[in-house]
Length: 166
Length: 236
Image 1 (cartoon, rainbow over the protein chains, first blue to last red):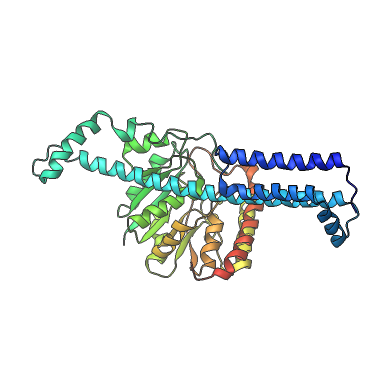
Image 2: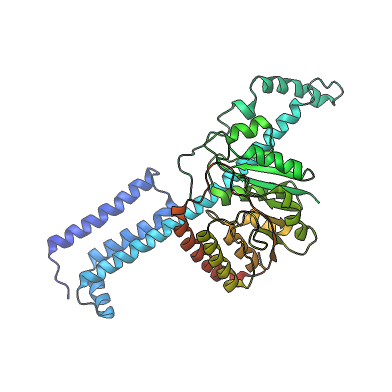
């Protein structure tokens, strides 16, 4: 059996409980998304479980015939960290795909806006145009002519060009 | 047949004007779209001032994401054929019809303009040719497709493949990966001879230092594509 001094055991239990509380506080303050917190919560619950019932570790150690129980703990920790990193990569991939889509859609829309604005601007003094358009077009054309969006509006294509991906 | 020429452009202020002028002279019947991938130089200003048809990506996506937005544009506007052509003047628009022809005739889903068939014009450095040969051999080994100039960005696609690329296109250095994913999905890919020029100005996106990294990375991703795409064949 495992002989853990009571002081260490209490410290471990208190430590894991604090860890769990920190996760909940972060969740409550919306610093952590619920969908991404599951793996953290699972880790906290496991830690508490191991701290309260170190017997589990002893049994697992016998199953895998590992000499030192602490090695089993380290191995489990390492596996957990690997899984966590993998899940982060998955999340980042998802973000990257979404950013990609977002940027492309925005660029297509921006091009369309530019094209439509040019269309509105082109037949400026056109009196023969249908009434709803004719009422609308001159007003827009006049605002557009003072600030040509394609050339003078830097906000439209202000780049965060600092980090080109490669 | 509505043809769209997609020209990815990243910091090509020195070349883009000439590229478009030559394209319009050589191929007036097709539309073109410059994809400005958030250039940090005057490219965006030149495109706007000249009134060229162009997209402005608000953040830099890299060549893959840029070209893919061109494919999305082609889908949205109902083009039959999309031709990809570099914005640095390497690709001669005089060969545009030759590259698009096999696709227009329905012989191929994608046609690549290759500088290694007639071996004329700019042939790039020996080391790079060696690298391209390795990639070409690897693609042949993995899929059986015979494409010599796998890194050529001069390529024509039909509507079906354009739709596929609009949904799935590799990032970073996507040319060989685009070929292998198309072949694995059952599209036919071939090539026709073209003559390429040395880029006219500015800097290439692939520096010599990055080349080794590029090779390793592309080789790994080609093998990965082979593994992950083989079972999904045909269900796009």
